[in-house]
Amino acid sequence: MRINFKKKDLITIPNILTYIRLILIPVIVILYVNAKSPRDYYTATIIFVICALTDSLDGFIARHYNQITDLGKIIDPIADKAMQAAILLCLLIRIKGILPIFILFAIKEIFMGIAGLMLLKTGRKLTGAKWFGKVCTVVLDTVMVILFAFPSLDLSIVRILLGLSVIFMIFSLIMYAMDYIKIFRR
Image (cartoon, rainbow, N blue to C red; front, side, top):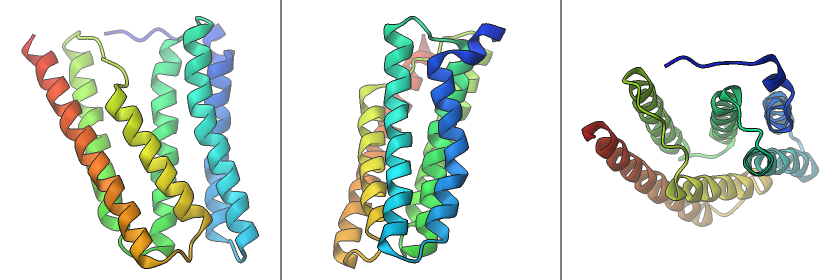
């Protein structure tokens, strides 16, 4: 399959929002890693929330204003996963027990990336985000926002939130695996 990038695709509103999200990732990381007070954590969290909201906004604009581009199909999911990975890495610094979540996240995303590339290589069309993937993203982002904003949260609450993330990531991984198996069998 050949991906066709057009010069005009570089400056669509959805793609510009994605560029902004990519640029803000290191800003969030620097703010969080160097945070000394609750205000610093809140600032990093607010920027993270803005990035998460632009993820929804760019998709809405692309679909409703016919601005879906091949470039956007590639950079948007990369920006989404880069942001989530960066946030999880930040949380690794401050919260014990995040490493298994990060590993599960990495396994899920690597699996989906490889499966997607295999689909492209065989000429099949990518299915796009499914409802269970979107729910998983909302749950993971919500948990990360809470952990980001409140780094001294009680350990029992942290464990519950992490468990919730694990459940949704495993569910999403299983559902995507079943979806990819169906596509490969066609």
